[in-house]
Length: 416
Length: 95
Ligand SMILES: Cc1cc2nc3c(=O)[nH]c(=O)nc-3n(C[C@H](O)[C@H](O)[C@H](O)COP(=O)(O)OP(=O)(O)OC[C@H]3O[C@@H](n4cnc5c(N)ncnc54)[C@H](O)[C@@H]3O)c2cc1C
Ligand SMILES: [Zn+2]
Image 1 (cartoon, each protein chain N blue to C red):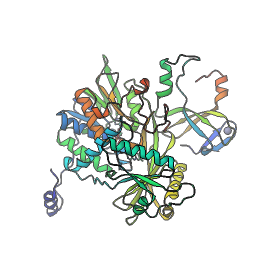
Image 2: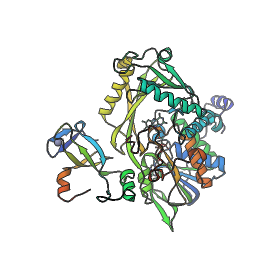
Image 3: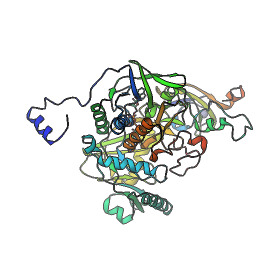
Image 4: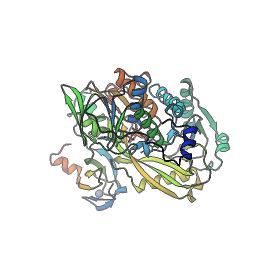
C-alpha cells in the first residue's frame, strides 16, 4: 500500500481497520542470492539498495531479535556530515544527501529534521581546529559556518557563556545536520525492501557460518540452515562474534554507550548542540523530551545497559553547559553495544573469504551513515568492487598503515 | 558491570577505584621480534572480543596500586576471578 494523504483519509473513514502490515513475516527459503546477517539500519538499507539499485531481489535479512531491536532503535538520532578527512567526508556527505531525499523515495515519514548541529568551542586552539574542519568541509562542497560567541548566544541564550573554566567562545555550525526518527528509518527501509521481494526473517539467530572450499555457502540459524551465493555481515555490536564464525578476527572491541531522555518540556532547544569541553550532546524530540548522551562507559561489554558512574558524568557535563538542566528530571536511560574500531572509522570491505562481505566498525556514529552504508555495501556486494566514497574504509588499512584517523589521535586512537 | 571487585590485596572495593586497561592480549610478539613481524599487527590491532568470559588488565589506582588480572563475564557482569598480574607472570603465565 502506498501511503499518501488519500490513503490516510480513506483509512480514517473506514475506521482504520484496513491498514495492511508494513512487511511480511516469511518462512526462510532454503537458498538466497544474498543473505544479510543483522536487521539493523545498515542491513535493511543494504537490502533495500541491493533490490532497488542493482536488481538483486532474492535476498534475506536474518535478524536474531525483532526489526529495529538493536542500535538503530537505541541511538540519539543525530545526522551530520562535519568530518575532516578525504576518506570520510565524501561518504558522510553522500549519506546526508540521501537523507535529504529519503522520505519521498521510500514513501515513509522518517521525520528528517535539518535543524542544524553546533559544536561548541571553548579555547583558541579548539577554534582553530574547528576552523580547519569547517574549511575541509567547504572544500568538499559541504556547508559549514563558524559562529562567534554572540552568534551562538543569539541561538541559545541560556548557556553558561562565562563558565570560569570552559567559557563558550563560539561554535562550528552545520545547518544541514539535524535529527531523524530512528525507528522510522528501520521501518521505512524494511517496508521498502519487503515490497521489492526481500525476506525479512526476524527471531532467527545466526549461530554458524558454513565455509566450504574457501567460500561461504550459507548460515546455520536457530531456524535451520539457509544457503546463499553471497553472505554479508552487518551485525554492528556483535560483529566480532559473527565474524569469528567464519574464522575472522577483527580490529573491533564491543563497548556500551548510554543515552537519556528527560520528561517532556516546552520547546527549549531547536537545534543539536555538542559540548566542546566534555563529552555531552543534546537535542529535543518532537514530544518535548530532551535527548542527550555522552561518553562510552569505558570497558568491554555486550550488555545493553551501563553504569551509574557514567550517568553521573554525563549529567555533570550537561550542567556545565546548561545550568538550567539541574531542574529537569531524567525519564529513561538505556544502553547499546557499539562496534568500536581501532581508528574510530568504519569498515565496508571484502574479506579473505571471496564471497563474504563485511560492514562494521561504526562506533557511536553509525546512525547518520545508514543510507550511505547501505548504498555502498550494496554496491560492493553487487559489483564486487568498492564504491568510490567508501574505498578507504578497508579492512586491511590497519596492517598497511592507512588509518582513517578522524580525530588526529595517532596510531592507536584509544577511542574506547 | 559488577559494583564491587574483590582485590586480592585490599578486599572488596568499589569498581570506580580501578582503571581498566582492556583485554589481556592473546599473544604477544617474542622479545626482540622484528618490527615487520605480523604478530605486532595482531597484538596491536586485532581483538578476540569474546561475548562472555573475558580476561582483562585492571589497575587498582585508589588502592594497592597493583596491576591485576580480572576475569569477568561481559554479558552477565559476574566477576569470576581477580589475581595479581605479577604473581601470575612469576608463576609462568606470560599472557
Ligand atoms: C546510545 C546510542 C546513541 C547513538 N547515537 C548516535 C547518533 O546520535 N548518531 C549516529 O550517527 N549514531 C549514533 N549511534 C550509533 C548507531 O546507532 C550505530 O552505529 C548503528 O545503528 C549501527 O548499525 P545498525 O543500525 O545496523 O545496528 P543494529 O541496529 O544494532 O543492527 C545489528 C543487528 O544485528 C543483529 N544481530 C547480531 N548478531 C546476530 C546474529 N548472530 N544473528 C542474527 N542477527 C544478529 C542484532 O540483533 C541487531 O539487530 C548511537 C548508538 C547508541 C547505542
Ligand atoms: Zn588493591
